[in-house]
Length: 636
View 1 (spheres, one colour):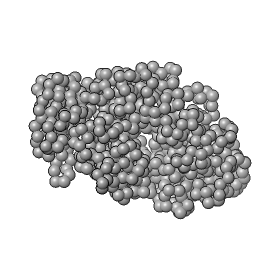
View 2 (cartoon, rainbow, N blue to C red; view 1 turned 180 degrees about the horizontal axis):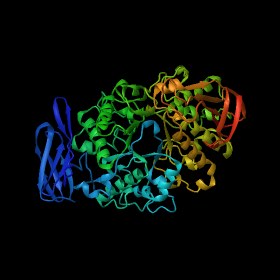
View 3 (tube, rainbow, N blue to C red; view 1 turned 180 degrees about the vertical axis):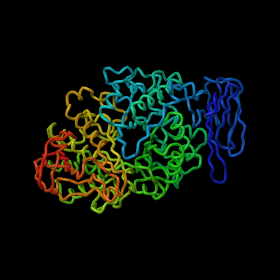
View 4 (cartoon, helix red, strand yellow; view 1 turned 120 degrees about the vertical axis):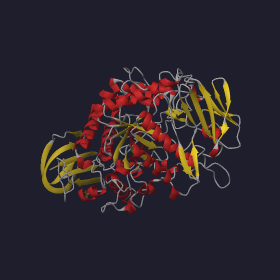
């Protein structure tokens, strides 16, 4: 960036033309405004109280230059009478109604120039998904409850470090539409999947949404504090739809350019939100690329989670990956490998899970292991493998649960012991490498784990629910994919049975911090499980070839899944774990069960809801008893 200027040049080659996005180029001498809008439109920019006519250049680029120092002035683009901040505003007034001229270097906290991305191989990531308000609103000692700044406070950093997670996935943190920033003294809540200004932090999470620079500076302070703690920051991005069409900045500047339509002229709704953006359009593709780059360069973001990635075309996703690699190839990109409805583009052109092999180094969530463990997303009353010791299932159901779990444990890659004909949702491996699979059992968009178990297994005791909770996460955190957990699961989180809590009050969504003392065995198990994964390469081999060479599934009774990982170097492969011949046995049965294992002398490190890497005891031979509804992990 040129000293004293906030410049963002955006060009895109497409259809033999060079396109440019709207932009605000500031200097103390003058500010230049540019806008991509229809060539036959009437275009003005209103800066403060002055309306300035824009001039049409080539490629539908309108330009206006305003002399003098405009820093702090509001501005709006007016296209055929429709006013908006444009599509790439970098600072906005309260509720995002107007753009604001800023010099972004003025928003940098002290030491920002030395802040950098947290480098971490993908297989070392442990992702913790959080909503700003959920995490801190009920914390008694929080100075900034519900704000970006809460994540700069010692209690927050200490908790995350103690738990051991090393990447924070923050739910949408750009400027969204459903919370009125002028009424923050009134109860309001939303997840934020209703975008307005994609490149500006959300004002309700700042201490003063009326001052445009405050939200920018505080977001940077949050990132800086997490980086100092060695924690990466992943941003949830929602480019697949806008809050609506009528009030969309896209629609106000260039009607219908940015949205897909069906053959009959209606708007396509693959997002399930009433509209679906057209990522294949040159300017929409360029917008997505430059938006991601902007968050990396200006805010030092370390990764991106793409909401409904299955709505975006493959070419755009690969172009984003390429552009990000030119900045920092360690930045992690993943998304939901599905859409919420039928998209206007053919499925073979979209970033759905089945096409992940066409998108190198982009990952997707595994609903195979998720639903195999706890039951299907679309029916909270149905249990999965975790409930097989309590509810009656047919042998084909149990076989499908187990095979789907094996598929997830291997990282969604081709493995000779996984029978894809029995795997739910996918009949072919969709990951080329295990780091392309996100392993999880709960996230924001569903019941949290404890609630799901309670709903699908009515009448079960809290003790059993806790045992099954810990068992579920053992499968997730010992899998070869990238593990992912919902904030608060380590505190035995409940949302009182609400499945879709996107606008539920704080009383439903908040974390109950008292549970850390009420259920210390839960937090300690999560903490020690995460530490075990971090300390042992065998649980995160990182490549498909190493997984196929070193991970072997063992024959077990119906309600048990088990596998062995060779932690020693094999054929020159650099595993070299301090543990070798590790065996993980997951028992969903209500009964302690004796099983056969390879003959050996073993140290027990996980048993009956307790993990201790230093050892819980020893055993010899070829048989072992696995406690009911728990995991047993042993190693030679």
